[in-house]
Every structure is written in C-alpha cells, then in structure tokens.
Image (cartoon, rainbow, N blue to C red; front, side, top):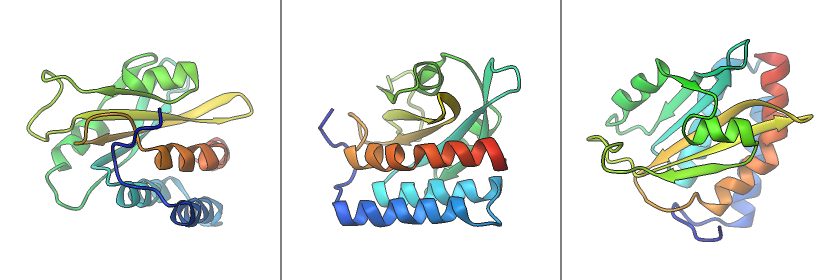
Length: 170
C-alpha cells in the first residue's frame, strides 16, 4: 500500500492540514455546511477531483450523500450533482464496503464506470469513533492506482474527530 498515486506528501504539510481539519471541526459554529470546506482542503492538498461524505440513513441500510466537493474547474459539477442524488446500499462500492469493514477501500474504475469526466480511481475512508462508523469519505481522481499515503494518514489522524463531529453536531 505504499505506492502513491496522487501528490507527494511532506510530514510538516500533512501535520498542518491535520491541524486545519481539526480546527474546522472544533469551531463552535461548525455545522454540516463546514464539511465541503474540509473536503476542499483535502482535495486541494492531494490533487483530488471529487470528494463526498456519505452518511447512513436512520435504519443503517443506505448511505446518502451528506456533502460533496469538486475541484474548481467546473468539469466535475455533473458528477457532483449525480452523487448528491445517489443512495448506496450498505456494502455497495468502496464507500459501502468501507462502511461495513471499517477500513479503507479503493478500486480502479473500469471503462464502463468511467464517463466523460475521466475519473479513474475511487477510494473510501470510514470515519469511526467508539467502534461505530458515522460516515465515509470517498474521493475520486483521474490518476489510477492506490490512494495517496498522506491522504490515508490525514484521514486516519482526523477520522475519529470527524466521526465524533458527525455523531454529535450533524
């Protein structure tokens, strides 16, 4: 899992990003509206094209899009709109598998999955606190391969706080 597909990672820059994410989550005024900013911070740092936060319905049978971010080029607005309206069955795709297994999942998108956007890889990271998965961050990039080790490290470091934020403030 050590191969990097997206952006290089410096420990100091990663630490600064972790601090920025944690600061955003701890703001007294932080709400669900803060989540696209957090996805944007991750996206800009790691060269992501689209980021989504999936959260479960009350019955825990589906994941719905709670927030979405896409890079500023505008070419992914259609992808973002489609994701906003999508429901994933638990276990469906990387996000559904990450939800069940409570560990990161990824897949290269095959030709049938790749539309005009050119997205080639999807990676999903569960947000777990106290043994419960409160949501999943899924990212999409044009670069094939495995998710960046720096991205995995940032989400591992901030995931429990992010999950707690979702549990108590959203």
